[in-house]
Amino acid sequence: MGQNRYSKVVTQDPSQPAAQAMLHAIGLTDDDFQKPLVGIASTGYEGNPCNMHLNDLAVEIKKGTKEADLVGLIFNTIGVSDGISMGTPGMRFSLPSRDLIADSMETVMGGMSYDGMVAVVGCDKNMPGSVMAMLRLNRPSIMVYGGTIASGCVADKKLDVVSAFEAWGEKVAGTINEAQFKEVIHNACPGAGACGGMYTANTMASAIEVLGLSLPYNSSNPAVSPEKIDECVAAGKAMRLLIEKDIKPKDIVTKKSLENAIKLVTVLGGSTNAVLHFLAIARAADVTFTLADFQRISDTTPFLADLKPSGKFLMEDVHRVGGIPAVIKFMLDNNMLHGDCLTVTGKTLAENMADVPSLKEGQKVIRPLDNPIKETGHIRILFGNLAVDGSVAKITGKEGLSFEGPARVYDGEFAANAGIKAGEVQKGEVVVIRYEGPKGGPGMPEMLKPTAAIMGAGLGKEVALITDGRFSGGTHGFVVGHITPEAQLCGAIGLVENGDIIRIDAETNELHVKITDAELEARRAAWETPSLKVTKGVLYKYAQSVATASEGCVTDE
Image: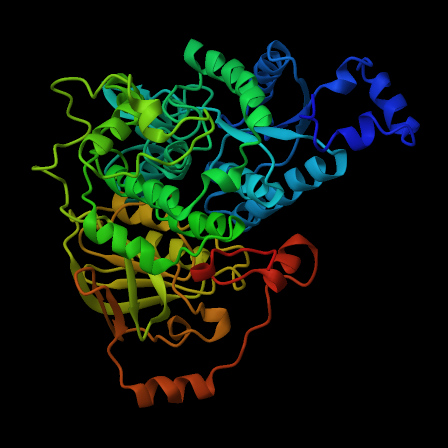
């Protein structure tokens, strides 16, 4: 066939009898040796709802490869649950897991000489990790998202995992009692699937779909649905065309398709983590894509989706009104996307959407262009004396467009959580959480627990928060993260003192501490580099190798 471009070195070379004997041992026949070998990479594990069903989906993908006369071979890699690790020392392992996933998929695919890959993924770091591996390998590949969770419910109110975090803040503030708190916990997450709002998992899944590396409806098909099963089989079968035509990830991931991805993220009001991950994806694709591109797109793209965390709808509601393809079709119809970009179907984005039904008449999830939630994007790239190399803000407009107030400084998330719980944070203050960057964390943990506590305490519109860490896609409020340089590298965020006046401006895209350059330099001269929090192991290796947040926190350059 000539399609087993990589596997032939082990299946057809007579000088590789041991390899062939071992492949016979797993059940392959001489006839199978003529077929392309497809690695099916699953991040399935029992420990969280996002990933608990993925190994079952991998089996469905394998059925699809068999129907297409391909040999599908399942392998596994790691995952870290952000929802479970959030607010604990375990969250330091979340972002490093992205690069470990990329490394492990690349390792197995390269080591085993597979001709193509289908990755089935769940919690949010799984997705960019798998895409980075695809691009490094540059072999025919498809990503399958495990799908979104169904909503929980208490007293006719929809719940999700962020509801549980915010319930803790409400309990601390005394607005709900213990029984009400427990009821939220028991009902927030009813089964398999990733977090239901437009948090990082659904953000990345949607963006990767419009990027062209997954099949239509991949991101909005619910985790527990016949559609998801059918899609998995279809993904396995779709590998046949990709291998036959030798369509590779770098044929699909281009400057134009990356712009499409970020435009969709902007319309949906997606997670700020998309900035970090797409910087890394672009670097893996050898495409120049920087913070300036995010700001350019945000300046020219409206925020339209009334989705959680800042809105009221969930991904299940997007599915109900037509799914992500209907949103893409809406954007194509309004000249908001490049329709000529190649996708894993072998067709262009516009060709894929030609027969897709439009958004349902009368739907309220996606606003019309003449009535946006915000005329420009919610993602703002801020610079200033606090962020010389940039920072990322999530400003939906509901919080206002600027904030100025005295600093309330905490060296680390745990100190901040304790301070918020103790009532230290006052209206009008800017909470500063530092030494949580890629090196200082290490691992750049997410600050969902403190932001959810602030929201739960009723201070969401009265307090801002800045950090050299990052935020969950579930975070909302006036927040700025990814501050670069980080405190560990003597960034100015490490020099801020309690009471310093900090100004955040999402119109001029500036982040400043109101002290003189001379005072800032005097503090810098007196500053001493703190020791890393770890001295060996995976987090130590990460701290030694990781690039800055403005460079995507990559570890392979």
